[in-house]
Image 1: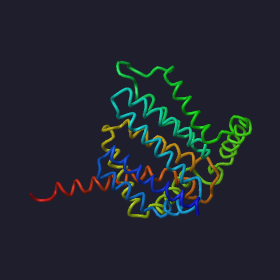
Image 2: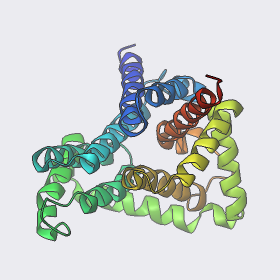
Image 3: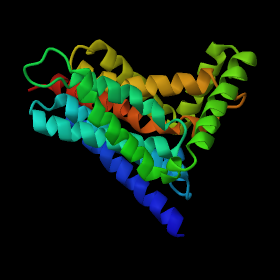
Image 4: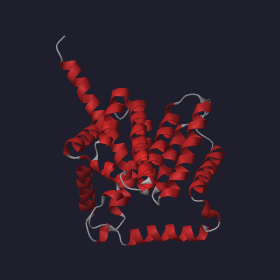
Length: 272
């Protein structure tokens, strides 16, 4: 009961974080719609019903991305550094939860590149050292046994990715079929109406890509990278929700944006 209660609490906190992330990017109404979209996903409800690590991974990854977005959109150097340090700490902790957690290094790296100090044309490489140290600190917070069993963990991670790449879905299914299988899996996670809103939000984001493109690059670099690795490089004849559940919270942002866009258009069409 204790474990399930913690998972349910983390699931609820993840919904709140998605609201804050949507509000940061698109406004309060879009944030509420994004959070509602995530809360209505039955697979999200189901996974947070059990005592599993996925609830903690979703929470920590969304918190990492939220801090990254705030770092990119903050002009003040001190606050930006604080957000960035927090993002790297959470990213390191996420890496200790699941083997796919290190994929957050991609948005973290983009955030560092986008968050150049005032008066500099680009961030200096030596400035990355404290952030890397913070990332390692977060990793050790989640898995302190790395200090004594680092060789075991290193070989376990390498073998996992090596075997996945060698026996990947490319051997059994074409890449296109594998991607389509997981798109249908996402449709089942969201339900057809919400999935269409996700697709619509993707179209709206593509049309307005020049507006706030850096935060979107931070968010969806992780989503695209995670999705492609899970669909193309690992053996999985039958798609499973657990393999892509980590990107569902971020896709709900697209659903909230699309619904907010539709509401804005309907208000404009109303006669005065």
